[in-house]
Length: 403
Image (cartoon, rainbow, N blue to C red; front, side, top):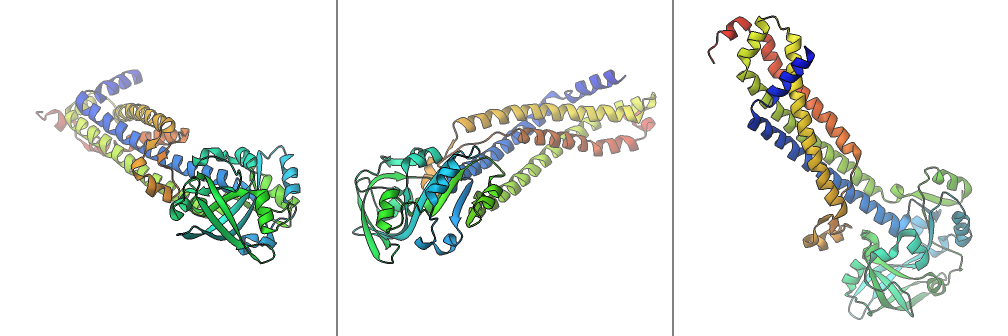
């Protein structure tokens, strides 16, 4: 009996083929668009997070307890190189970058802007975050009086490769010093703060310029996937401030929450579309076959079996719609993951917000599993109104209706 019910349900689900195909197409297109939007937003957020980690703080960063409030050269980590060597020996640490920073004024003959000069080691930065991938123009070198500059700061000062810039600031003794630099390369990290203010030079030169001891640093950035590392470092270095990525970038955490809410709203809208679409098809289908159901009840078929048939019809439509949507969605996400969405026409505006002009999507199995359960639920709920009508109908009067 049950196999007969399922066979009837399958045949009836596609009885009006054009109508059913239209609903399947509606489910498939709306689902694939929802998956694409989720993948793009998550991909954009993950790219922003990864770029921020690579260009600045990694998963964890160490500071002097007072440095983040004072930004003073007196509040640097005095034994930074010793700590760096110790961290590099740990199996749970992938890479370490030691940086010295100082705020000051960068100026050309016609323009000036506040900037942060950062002393780095190019080899360490390449291992830490592949700094070469951020190079937009020029070469990755500090040869001579060479310096690298953030893309937005270069635009503001109207600097090109080979241009000269003067950076002035207070050294560790309080004296105002100036340093003449020649731009060798322009970096675009998509980190708003760095792109708008950073000047990079060799760390050895910066230590001499600022009259700071060789082994000191403003920041020790760490790349690591170990979740227990933060607690371990806080115990090992109680005199230092150990900060995680989200503690240093709280706005990104808020952005993730906003994206989650937006995705949830989009998800609900799509599920409502699916619910309304299947409800409409099932309701019209039952009205078309109301006499058939009346006869079935008259000859003794229980309401339970009729209900099973209708639920099965709705599930068949929902399942085929899901398969179509999952297929379309996966193909779109696969393309966006490998080739991205090119928004070069809006590149300047997007870069000012720290976003790349090409947005790559990400693919998560949770997209498909969550959507599957939601569509099945929507399919089952969609037959509530049609079933209510069948339950209340008078089978003898219905069989007399001339359809």
